[in-house]
Image (cartoon, rainbow, N blue to C red; front, side, top):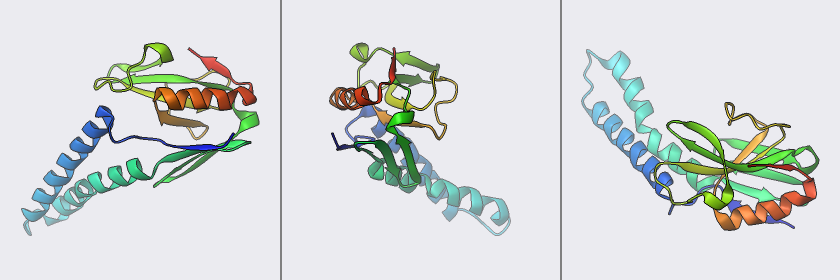
Length: 166
């Protein structure tokens, strides 16, 4: 069973909000770049130039991120790099909920994929026990939660005999 999914979908409110916030950073950086003078040149140019790059880099990451499930591995491609997990090394998977108050393991049946406050991700991990405090190590892949994608991942992962975290 081979299939490919986009890691992020632009119709999700959380993704749209993230893009709006980075666009505001870019607009503010562009404004500060036009207001820099010779007196504050040394510190205003690097700060405002880095702020100007926020929206294009976030948009590039959002549009180029995709996850490909092959017969023996899962690979996440993005603008910033590639993560590959072999099927025989995958030990846990599930749904991860994230908000400003922290991370938690979520029940896939009780999640709202269009929630504006909380973000839900499908995680696939090589760790024996999923550590909620380290959700970004190299041996994890996160995909924006969508029910149809979760069902496909669950079917694919049955071959890996991984344990579901709920």
